[in-house]
Structure formats: structure tokens, C-alpha cells
Image (cartoon, rainbow over all chains, first blue to last red; front, side, top):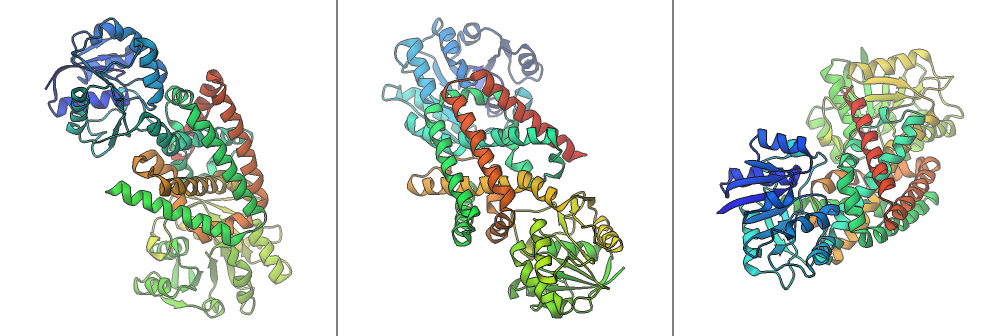
Length: 289
Length: 289
């Protein structure tokens, strides 16, 4: 049982942690910290949190578990604010979308990564944001990746694993760099493509209406382009060393496809499309497991 | 009332036309033509069509309306087969995804585009294919674009418009070249991107598992990569003059985005992501109208 769970950033992820932790009876008290006063007020009024703070140190004081669920660009400031109230008895974890950047931030602020900080990332999200988008079952059946270091306390890891498992998630461990490499491919690159395409077509639409002739395929393809711009700005900057080479690799792939189309290479194009369809089926089969 | 509706290609689109036309009581008899014997048998057994033919000319004989709903690469062969039974009393239309290529195909076969052929395209689809994917309400509330020429018979246009409207669709007219330009942006380019990305990541997944850490955003982004490879091969080749320059334009856009990420241009990146989100909201607002 957690006596006092402090959630820093009561948005889609933080709000969903609060709702799930309460529903499962995992803690006696949940306090929230949020820089957005309106969001914090909603979280209090709706009973997602028991008390709200705008100040990180005040909110985290006396908590036994702290979960940081803010965009990854804010971690220097949050670790900095936590430093004054940092205790070896607390377990601190996070839900940041990139892991090397979060670990580097902890190193910058503390000199070394504290043993009671467990870096983590729930692979769950939505294009909506804020506490109003949070749900009690967001993590049910979803994966959570923890990326502890050799110096991370085994008991802290166990406590964080247990928290996520109690909320219905499947927890696995990975090297931080491997996490960032995998997520760059399966999440960061697709988001960049969706943003870039929607932006490019949005400009065409302003000149000559085209969106009225777009349908369900376009709606689903661009869904992630409705994601929070600040969160994705932070991810792109924090994981640029993985994302930028992948963008260029994809540009090369597109160049090859354009060449196949230009010269009417039917067999190779058909094989490419059929392989893609097969790969997606493989992905779907895993998703349903 | 249509006495005999002949549908060439009883797949997702052709099967849905048959189901909707029957449900709305638009015709006395529906015959289907399909090269795939298994698909044709299913369409007959399930009562989607009243009779099935593998031969185009036999199926189309004595029909008063013919709808061609096959991949656009097959139109030379289908027009060629229809030529022997072509009558000025029949109205022929199609559901092909590209319009210039279909019109050029008619010119090649007939010398000029027959006045009783009305080129058309329902903006409705799904990643599933075959008669088993067809539904009675696929066109309800969807757009259909007709691209008649100056020589197209006004009464033939009216008959085709009326058929689609009776099935719940919103019909508009457009120049064939403009259709191909708009659809290249809103449909063909997104499909190429989804196929190319899923193919590229599928190869990474074979080397080192990554799909198990992909989630709902990836599922929606790649949904259209499960589309029929033959249909999309035909579209890419038929509309290559619009698609290839768009791919290169998008590659330039990606190069710009990669540059912004590399040099940490936070303000410009944020603006790009926020603009994309705004453009998608504009698209969604139109979709709901």
C-alpha cells in the first residue's frame, strides 16, 4: 500500500495513473502537482486527486511514491525542484516518452542517477490530452517499459513494477538506449510523418480545398497529428539522435518507391505492398495476444 | 428503376453497390462478373447477386446499367470485352480510384470516350477486400465524384447521379485531372507512406523485435497498409504523374523537419506541430458536416 502518491503532471497519463491507483485501492492519498491551474482545479473537483499543488517540492513532500508524468523537456526543472525534498525513503519514477534524456537530466541535476529513481514509460496514449482525457483503464493490457540502471535499487524497481502491474499493465525491462531506438521507429517517426503530412496538406487545403474529399483512411492515418504539440516537440528534441537518422532512412525508402512507380516496376511494387500488408498482419497478431 | 444492373468486380465496392441497390429497391435483377470463382460463388450463395458470370460480355449483355468496380489496371481488358456488346441504350459507369487513366483507357479501346460512359469514384473504402467485406451502407453519407467529359450524355450522368444518391451518397462533379490531383494528396500519398513505413519497419522487426512495443497510434497510422496490394499497385501506376512529384515534395518537407529537429529549432517545430493539429481539426470539422 502506498501512503501518499504524488503525481507530477495530472494530464492524460498522470490522471489515468491517479484514477487507476484509486480504483484498485493502491494508495491512501493522491496528491497532484500541475503548472496549469485550470487542469489542477478540474483534477481536484472531479476527485482524481485529493489535493493539488502548483509547487513541485510542496506536493512531493512526505510522498512515498512520486510519478513524474510531464513532457520530457521539463525534467531538468522538476528534478531541480525535487532535489530539496529528495529522500532515500521515497521511490521516484516517471512516464516520460524518452529514456536516455530523462536519465541524462537526472545526472545533470544530482551528479549521478539516484538509486531510488526508476525510469519508465507506459506504451499507452491518445491524441487527446489533459486530465479530461484520462481514464481508469488506460493501462489495462498495455505495455510498460522500465529502463533501470545497474545502480537502481532492486526494491525500488519492484515497487514500481508492482504499481504498474496492479493497474493492469505488462511490465518489461530494457536498456534505455534500446528503448529510445525502438520507440523512435514505432512511435516517434510515425508521429513526425503524420505531423509533416497533415501540415503539408493543410497548406494545400488553404489554397484549394482538398480535405472535403478525404475519407476514413486519411482520418486514421492522421489521428496522431492531433497529439499535443508541446509533448512531441520535447520528444523530437530529446530523442533527435535516433529520430533524425530514421527520417533520412525513410526518405531514402520513399526515393526508392518513387523510382519503382516512375519506371512502372510492377512486380517489385506489388511485392513491397504485399510485404507491408504481411508485416502489419504480424503486428496485429502480436497486439491481440 | 434499373431492370438489370451488371456489376463487374463484386468486391468491397461492387458488392456494397449490389447490397445497397437491392436494399433500396433500385433494380429488378443484379448480375455479377468476377474473375475470382470463389468470390463469385460467395456473392451468389449469399444472395448479393442473382447470377454470376466469369465472362464480361456475357454478364453485361442486356444490362441497362453496368458498373465497373475492378482495379484500374484492368480497364483496357474490360472495355475491350464490353466493346462487342456495347449499346447506346446502356449506361456504363465505374468506381475506379483514378479518373484520367480510365478515360484514356476508354479512348484507347473505343477511339473516343463513349457518351454513355460516366467516369466516377466513390470516396469510400476499407483496408479489407472481397465480397465478404461489402456492406449495405458503405456509401451512406460518403462522397462520390463524377468526372464526365463535355461529350458525356446528360441523361447518362443523371442516371448515375441518381443511383449513387439513392444509395445515400453525396455526388459532386470535377475535372478528371483535378480529381487525380486531389486524390493523390488525400489518399494515394498517405497509402504510399503507410506501405513504405510498414515495409521498412517490418524488416527491422525481423532483425530485432519492435512491433511488440507498438501501440494504438501505430495501429491506426498503418491501417491503410493492410489494403489490397493489387488495387494500390494499379493506382500508383495509373496516377504516377501526380503521385511521384508529391512523394518528392513530401521528402523535401521531411528534410526540412529533420533539419529543424537537428538544430533544435523549438519555436518552428512547435508551430509546425500546432499547425498540423489545427489543419486536422479543420478536416474533422468538415467530415462531420
